[in-house]
Image (cartoon, rainbow, N blue to C red; front, side, top):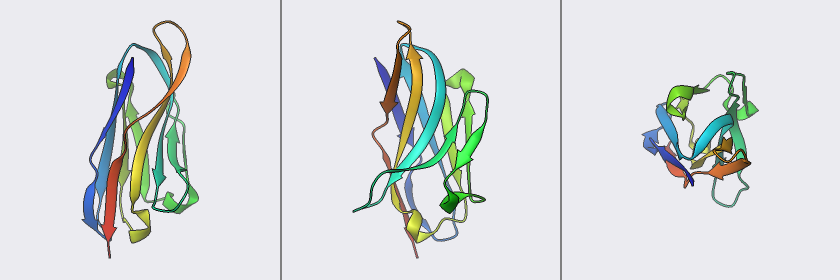
Length: 120
């Protein structure tokens, strides 16, 4: 069994910063790509940022230059540093991981989500 647990969401004023964390735990052999998605009310869930096990990253155009994804492989943790936040960044943010469990099977897991609200 694998769990992803996010933390760090909250309410912040426009222009402010937040740092999200996601810890993966359980029967994990190795983690490939780790991702952050977000879903605003009435909208589809979309990719915000991704990072491979080697540290390669990619970002949605809307967050480039403001958000930074990073990971600590030893701690099975991924972070999302969000700066210069805008009201349109308001959403539930979800952690996602593509990983191998101890049995050798490749699986994909989601966290429960953390709310980020940016006030104008």
